[in-house]
Image (cartoon, rainbow over all chains, first blue to last red):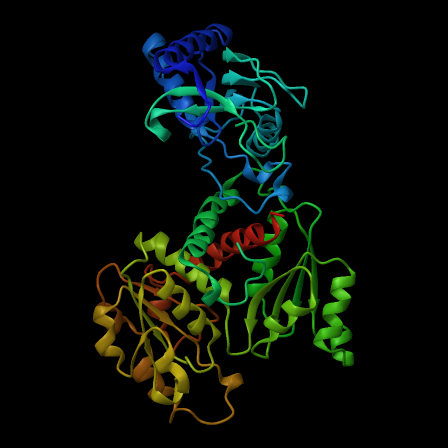
Length: 190
Length: 303
């Protein structure tokens, strides 16, 4: 664990939050028949997969799941050297007329979601777009809100939220710690 | 990532791999309903072509447009260059117009390097004389990687007019960085004097090299750059160094045939081989757009 960081969610708590979100998605979308889950790299992708597994367990329904990289749509590209791209995998069948649920680990300024909405517009025309996040840490800079939230976490701008997942980091945890120096105070939502 | 792309020799293995990986992601943009990304909106790319080129210029133009950049085509014919303007003055003009990136093709080796000293924007070498053609080498490596799944340990034969080829030099440097083994095959008259300093092997015997190659890349005999005679006859050249169906049959089963284009059927490649599914010429052209998008993004997309 980084210096001065403390865990605000542990593995079992993350699991419970995801199970609840899976149920909420099914409820809000009336059974989830039209739902497509799109994770935003990097940690939104395994979260989307976990949600799909839970939905399948509850409703015996295979939900198309993919990923949506938003790097080329960021509004801060010129503030840093060019970044490596993440994977975009749109499930076969496309996004037209689907209820797309975007999945990300942390909702912060809202700029990542803004970029994701622009990217979606170039890929098809979903019937509706919803947003699921594991942690909402506040401090929005755009008129954007989440439809499904694992945990609302009031934070100070001087703090840093880190999500660790087994698939990417070897274990599950949400950590709250002092801010690392980062390029541009309003950079990402990660 | 660096500011200019002048030579594949300047790329580290990580940088070259980043370019190829980025191109692999960008290749999917061509399959989408909107074949465009907003990434270079408001940036200006100038295509400055002192030599005729259809393939490379349109490829760069399409790549820049798919990234939403504004593109200006500046060809030597019908511009101030034909009135006697120097490269430096043209460069300063482009600079004054606020070009963020300049793609240059020039008949003089080193022209791109000179240009890089005069402008603030990024310079992309699209072929300078007989020196280098980095994006061609990158798209060749990309094509090999997507066809054969790897570059490390791949055995690549580059056959033909090495002396006048900028593609050969760029490929040798890049493939060496990426861990492939290159053998140049040509008559002694079509090899540069300094070829022993290149990180590759050299052979005069195509039939000896072919069975040991995963990739054979054929180069056109560049008659327009030849001021003297380099081989007795085209027919003899073709007999010794041309790839026909019989020679192709002696290569490993999954070996591929590449050509940077334009091909001259009947000289370095037979029509039978050119039309075979193992020949990647059109794939190379398609990959060229994705690869050039990757280079433009990595050079112009960041701060």
